[in-house]
Image (cartoon, rainbow, N blue to C red; front, side):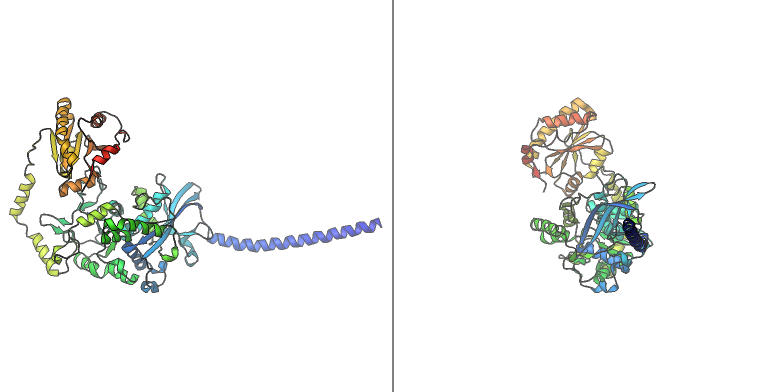
Length: 578
């Protein structure tokens, strides 16, 4: 009986063992095929990306959206879909977006931070054209750039978004290699510097005094960018006549082609190349493309006026940014080789568009962001002269080509008609001595040219009093300021100078823009010809604050902004610039 029982147990054990072995074999075989399939997928999606650190949606609207989407379609329609999209009616808000991410690579030689643009349809792309972050997220390989250590993820994403339209789409691809940027604000200068770094010959046209490139505050200082006004030379010819042939125009202030009104991208493409202002520029200047980077917010402010539009614009920006609804926008793929050619060059050269440069608040903590507008850009557009050849109701900014070919011929004739007499008169004006100083202790400053000649080029230590004729406190301070200057002259001799600048003239207003002065009276210091410290106010003389500032100026002390911060009483006493 015992033997039979043990035999039964052994038989059962053998049966169970066989069953386990059989099941294990099935699992192994199944795993082999499953793993084989999975391995194949991993081979296709093999990547060195280790982690995604940040993801944001960059929104493009207004004329900037039309310019960017039209460029991508013209360059490589396969990335944005078939040609039927050209005739498809645009979203109600005339807006599009790209998703930009930053991540970390896991290379043998070390870890690198990268920035790239998400590809929403990787299965429709060649394996070599995408990099997979995981099974659901991939980026266009040629949109990727390595982020230098000193640049944050936030600034890398903001720079990528800012460079897409103005820099990459505006880069000349013609024979001359020349680009014209209109505007003198932060975005305009970023675009001009970026194009110049990429090898373009760049002319920046602005009503701001950017021509004084030796001024320390000038963002174009030490660059190859040529700055000029809308009217050039003694005859005040328009920039399009003066510059001759160029390849592209990047308009950061306006939208002469009315791109925000197009119904589809085919119409938008025509407006950047073949119709309206683009056609005129092509005929006169062999210009291949007119690009407007005007945002919806900029357009709204110009149309409604700053007093009525500001709150509405901020409400619009908040509406599209949070919560972000991708169904309301057209997803735009990046232009070909954007990361390799354009973005990498800018990052390596330190040409950055900071994430905090947004009227609607810094981009850093947003899931989505849209570029807004700026008060300096609005002011510059309003100050830009209009073309009088179109009559008193003309809305075309001066410098763009005239509609009439006769007007162009007349302008060229006028340019070539300069006589020797006029040249002699010009030299005479240039040699004319400056007006006699009425105050022996205070230098009169009327423009940035005066600052350059009297302070910067001579490397002087100087106190500059910024005043205005409509400021009562300024008028009350002038006698005391002269007294302070006289006493300082006796004590310090030629080691310290005092100057006064009136902001009432056109050149005076340009000067305050460059010096970043918002209210008067303001005092600015220069140490050995270079800007020292921050502007501050004084409400009476003698002034302990000014005495202490002079002590800092003439010593090796580092400027302390908190020490010279204006009190509430001083802030109330000052007058906003008009």
